[in-house]
Length: 525
View 1: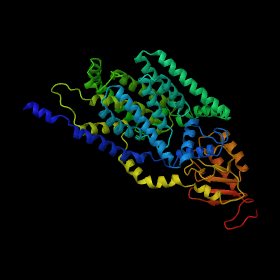
View 2 (view 1 turned 180 degrees about the vertical axis):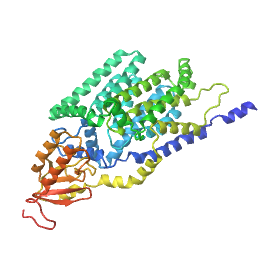
View 3 (view 1 turned 60 degrees about the vertical axis):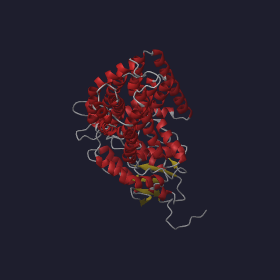
View 4 (view 1 turned 90 degrees about the horizontal axis):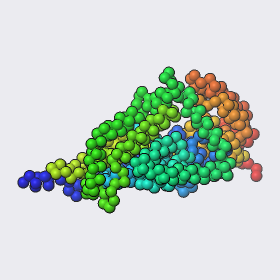
């Protein structure tokens, strides 16, 4: 009778079969709207950068921003296919992160069904957590770090090194996280020759990218952008009474809790503490050849629980160091998501069935709920309001991605205008969409109150050379920014003399009066 009752308590195929698709579908239904990029903030600038690349401009020479060249090239390539491809690219990065964690789960001996459940229901929640913003640079960095880790664990050293080289020119500040993961895997595998192959592969890919930058005349500008990033990371934004290291940490994990960095760190630590005993059991089962217990169908696990635990610790420490050295904003807490996703592998090991006599197995609904709850904490415990807000904004975001910018609508109605420049901060409207046939004469089309006087003076010297000026609504006085306010006053004085300005919803487009054509006026050919 007791055996019959125990059998009834065991997980049967029907609930297990239902739990996976239902949980995954619900998670993606909730998280997918978070991945739809908005034109607000930095992503508008990234789209404009990609549009200028497609117009033939050289990065860091004809058009300027401080991110890696491959990041802009990726956006430009997908925008050749469709303006909606920004959404596909974002989902592709989430999918790459899912593949990496699934590979790590399988390498650790987690059964396929449980690995799929924890991965497909957990990873999207983590990587779109509290610090995430769609269309930004950290998600590609997280996905590439995880993929590099998975390849190193599987001893695919050449591919792991190649992805590290790609990461260097996509999100360079996350290279230390990938590097410590590769070193940790090589140490556990006692494969220093493999590590050497990874290093050589990374150098070969890096050399190829550098050669491409040199051939396009972009290398000098790229080097300048790196030095500019160093100055930016340790500039006024990083200052605090306790020094720049504490300043960076406070920027990424401010007192109001934005970014959820402290929650992520605490959740990873909790998984490490509570997952240790389960990991030990999994390791013994793997060494004893208990394939049914570990889920390894053909080969023993490539990643013992000790390796997964060490990878989680190493990437967590590396991320904290990277944040302490570089972070100016809360979204930099996304660097912690590499360790957060690796912690999911430990969760999968903890939830794995052991088939110990007399031990009751977890019900699929409990497994699914536990995986999602832990992932929610690992992602920084994002307030549910943001999920609802993202879902509400999906239609308007999709429409915005499909349209030309409001600035281009004015410029394209001016037949005598052939060149333009922009003054303003974040390119909220992706101004360059619709302007590929026009020349951008001032490379810096977005700039901020913390810029140096040399940068602002250079922009002021360049602006008069353009036929039309886009003057964004962010050209306004800021408190405690005398240098910026002086720049704002000079821009206003410039367009106030000899320009005709047309207001838009987010800016004004000012055309030299000698070139301006009033609407409805015919122009002799």
